Length: 129
Length: 129
DNA sequence: GTATTTGCAAATATTTTGCACAAAC
DNA sequence: GTTTGTGCAAAATATTTGCAAATAC
Image (cartoon, rainbow over all chains, first blue to last red; front, side):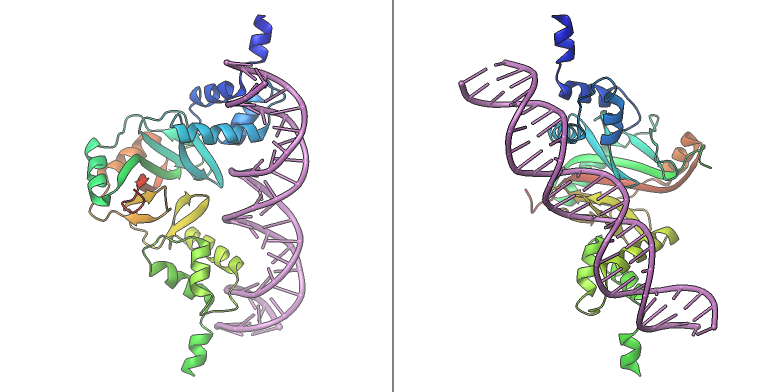
């Protein structure tokens, strides 16, 4: 029953694979559009529900909203992003990193518990200029 | 006509003063609620319109959305924030700063134009723990 | 069988916008 | 008088949710 197994694999898995397998830092709608041709009975509500779940579990992180739409990242390692205000693309800046010392320093200053650190540059990408 | 002048000063000015005069990194709705008692005929649409204008002019910056609501900062100098995922408060971490070198390094890596840099820590504040 | 996952559509919440009127200059 | 700013309510948009049916175990 290989076919059956393939056809009936959980949509949750497909959604997680999709976001883990891309570097575009997608929105819920992008994930939906990407999977819909392969999984015609997928619904957008399911995508939202599962992304919320993954986020809660820590399997993905939210990068906040870009142009009114929430964007996600399957790479949960802290790293640096560049967001283009023109086209909305989000890129990694893999050669840069946040000094480890920053996180502990932040924790001591807030008196609370620091879970996540994001360094984000905003501007216009070369294509939009 | 001091009273008249006070009463009729432009709502735009009131909105800008409000956001410049607080450290809570407010939402549109917070600004509206803050000003409404003093300016009873203020409308929420006006607040949104003016915040969008200030942002475009560079008089304020957006910190992105926290718990689904966009937050603003009247302090446009680059500085470091801590966002509590429990209560949604946004605090400055004034003792920390982003190394100047980071911005030029980011610019050279993107090949584009970097306009803004935000270093944000997320977690739980001491009150929420 | 029970528990979990999902489709669907309606509900919610935030933000934006059209338009007529008011205020500023 | 012309331009700019605003109130109001409706519209647009993204996201969440209730519930019954489908799927997994």
